[in-house]
Image (tube, rainbow, N blue to C red; front, side, top):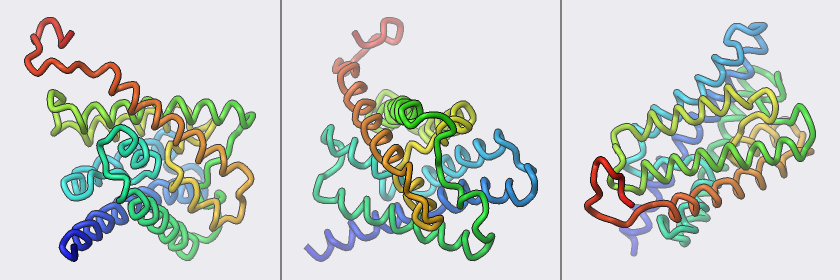
Length: 232
């Protein structure tokens, strides 16, 4: 039992490192862009989010699975790809690491750009639907490359990081393209503005659940598919 608990703690530790990096670099990029009058630009910020996800997947994926996102953890558990008993530890670790990163950014850069918090530029409904759709595609990609042995596993980091960057560049100006409750929770708490936080909890969780279950439905079960015909 002690060895099992130690194993879980190591996995949670890896999740905390990855989530810290995501929030510190991603939200930090938004803040640095504000301080430097747009030196990074919108595309640059989107690329930072994608790149930090990519490198941390390669650094910690073999330890913890590299979720870095409570919605991803819940979605994996819902389709039987992650033990429910470890979900609370993962979510707590991810949220704590995100909060530590936001607090450090506050100390280093002062409270600028609302600490990189995600807020809708249009209506709440528009942002909610966008967050759900973006997270749906993110989780669909994650499930494909992480759970299907026929996918090219070595490309998982690039596929997932590319999806994050694409979503951030495409929809960031409208909804923030969070796709991650922990990433939105931490800067909102440090900034003291929780008005729209529910959007970035409900949208990503719903989208991730739909993405994981949709891939499970379309995933073929034939173990020896034809390269030409696919698997159906």
